[in-house]
Picture 1 (cartoon, rainbow, N blue to C red):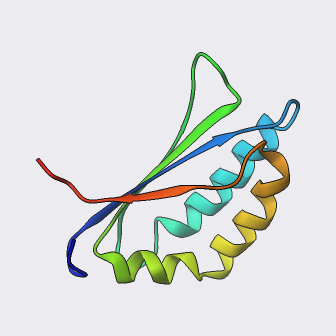
Picture 2 (cartoon, helix red, strand yellow; picture 1 turned 180 degrees about the horizontal axis):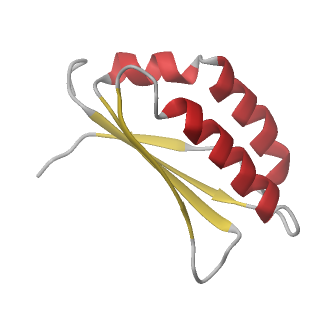
Length: 100
């Protein structure tokens, strides 16, 4: 993948028991700021209909540099601080490129 290729990110979050609503609120807050960032082509937050404690964030970025800038933004860092105690695993974000 070259630096100027659009990237897509996927993140999965499993809320601890009793923390799903707080996790959803943290995701709403970070979404509102992320979607306005230069280089953010889309940012979507999903909740499982079968297990309301499972959440997913999918985002689409102009390039790797745009996502790197996002990762350092105060609202992103604040989100990570808020979400980590609410979930039962480490935060993992997968960066991908479109192949088809």
